Length: 273
Image (cartoon, rainbow, N blue to C red; front, side, top):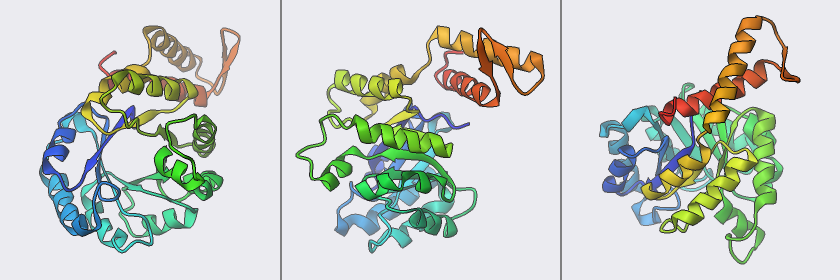
């Protein structure tokens, strides 16, 4: 069970930033070869990110990921050369399940895939995309999504598509990760956005600066009451020794227990239990 309260993304051309990300408290780090890198820097960034994946120490066994350039660009195939040294490849601007299956066919079977939903077409096909290949999560990319819609900016209320991404992820049985808060110098805004995502049911949120990790983790960490309830549910289910039980007037089955176990795993990562 992978805990993804926070996914910290940083430019693949900056070894300094990648080293800080690797040493941070993020649950996952993503070295970016796409939007953060100018076309003239693509080859140099790819070499830097490869060196980072090979040599850096990643604190607390965090997930090691990198974002490739979108399928169809001049760089995406060369970007896949780093796959052997990462845990996850993040695929941007995915519009169909075929794109995911293509990446899956060209990468090691052990490699996880995370998919950015950043277009109207991608959102329409989000469930099929989530079911394709080895997808572990859907990520809502609000900035590119807003641009695709022709919105004036992406700081408004995008909770409708945000919920649609979440529903598609849950229906497919994968995680859902919320978009970044670009006002990284405003911890209160990050906290509000993270609390909104956690309340909706998201598993975690993107960050673009280490200072955003604390408010994000605070929003996604379970409370003491939630932990006590989760442990009680797990214990009752184990004691019953059968497929489904009744507890406090509610049905408890394997799916319910999986949610409770995930809550305890988050607490373990957060050193709350």
